Image (cartoon, rainbow, N blue to C red; front, side, top):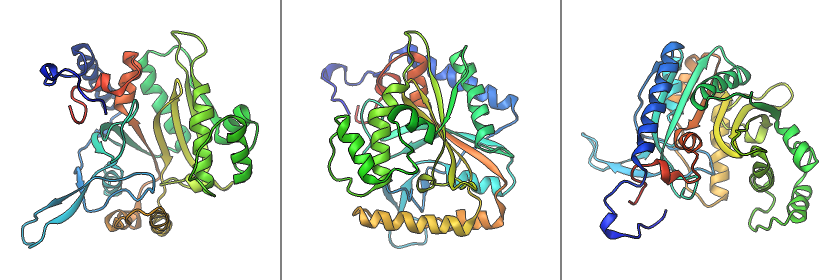
Length: 331
């Protein structure tokens, strides 16, 4: 986070009025799109008894005095409304969306903030390919696109830009690729997924920019390694039915053909906690309510989380998240 240099101006918003007006227009168009599609807008609690199990996401925690309890209870600020929204889906909500304030500890920089807005939605009856169509339709309206988004598998992405199959490459191959391209990092050890993420962020994402000024380049990447499935299903080929969307090299959205197997989900929670322990992080309580909802029956569906603030950066043509936030954290 940047320090405000002029104390006399410290009370003023960082984003110009035009960007605040832009946010209001984009939000209005999003709500109009989902109203046309008969997708219900919902709200879920910001505070939860459980936090994100993902080893690479750190939840913010607070303590709340709950009536009837002598000690304050720990609550986590949501990193995503996903668990609660899946409970709504299992209860028969039908297609739903939410504009949610979410929180992630330790995230700051040009593209990150510890507090930000996610647009998250779920479509029963969709797989991840159908949901990519849905995302592209929404963004074509918001960004007034005149070109179709590119779509390539995770394997094709690495083959095209780095010349090897990421599903077959072992850690020494990934390390050698990083060294050849001048990417130096310590502490990744034998964490294969960490090496893949490093190569993706440092060597591939910069090549996903539009080739000509004034154009936009949208790229969907799908079918990730099973080890990066998170909450996605695994297909018969052993790949995660998941996608990410990049606009001009910036990751904007992450979508899944949602896992509906409670036993498998419990195993993934356990694996996440094992990895958290190995990284020296605290374990996360298992969300038993989500697991009970999966047992009850989550409809076959796909869901996506899209960073609204990053989307506004793209629409406004700016390069820093703070330029579209009225008051960045700490201001």
